[in-house]
Amino acid sequence: MAFRVYVDGQQGTTGLRIHEVLAGRDDIEVLRIDPEKRKDPAERARLLNAADVAFLCLPDDASREAAAMVTNPRTCLIDASTAFRTDPGWVFGLPELAPGQRDRIRTSKRIANPGCHSTAFILLVRPLIDAGLIPRELPLSATSLTGYSGGGRKMIEQYETSGDPRLRSPRPYALTLRHKHLPEMHVHTGLATPPVFQPVVGPFYKGLTVSIPLHLSQLPPGTTPAALHEALARRYEGERFVQVMPLNDADVLSDGYFDVQAANDTNRVDLFVFASDTQALLMARLDNLGKGASGAAVQSMNLHLGVEEDRGLTVGETVGSRA
Image 1: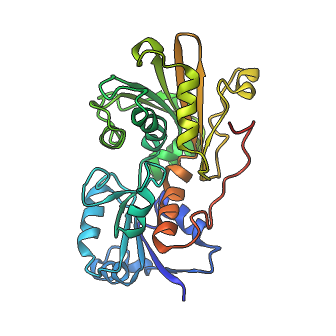
Image 2 (image 1 turned 120 degrees about the vertical axis):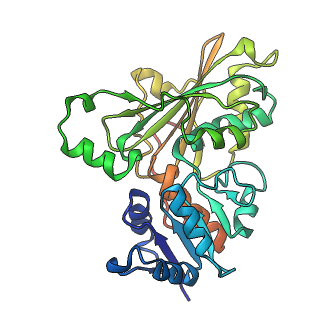
């Protein structure tokens, strides 16, 4: 018998992509709401409680309202908003976060899907803090360059129809230093303070890279670029969706430019360490609509349902060789 899945907010960017990923699955029955009843609370509640897994692809307040509608103890909610990402009653839906996280996702009925920027940042920083190579008290900064699809339907329409010449250039945003991903970047890395975070939206549809600069002199004595790289490689050894690329990746350095979009159309994250004798630059690359959103949600669903974790998802071809 197929698992029943409902997407509340199916017209949004993440909801539409989840539907695309599930379309070819013979083990999934997708429950659909009548368009005329899309905002009918009773019909939404009926479908939410009829589902084995319900994805909430809604704004924060609407996600909280939808979660309160669920009375069926068998329904697993996977929320794509920021509403529950640091809520202790919800499990953070990043299987690669730490040992035991997959078991938490398998057994929980409340899973909070990570954000795109925070996925990249956490996968770079958490292993290095756990290994004692980045002190918890070290103030970090990070820059993220992302495609405009991360801004949702309104931003996509703006970029694709307006013709505004200002959209041809990268646009830094969140200049109040209160980006909505900061709480999860803080909590799920173990940092003592949130990073200074500078996101930038670029004139391309999708793809994302987060960069974190480090001065080796501020790390524990004897910490080398090779040690940083080794800690990442050791943590993610055997992980299907996280690939640690060679130290000072020759394929990137030979061209001199980093391809932000090389992980697009996959559920893959590529991790890099570039370094000199005194400094290091940690970089992570992913598809902000894949591992940064819908792909991560489906990965958590697969784990929870007890099917192959990669069912319906793709790793894709990596440029260069994995470390």
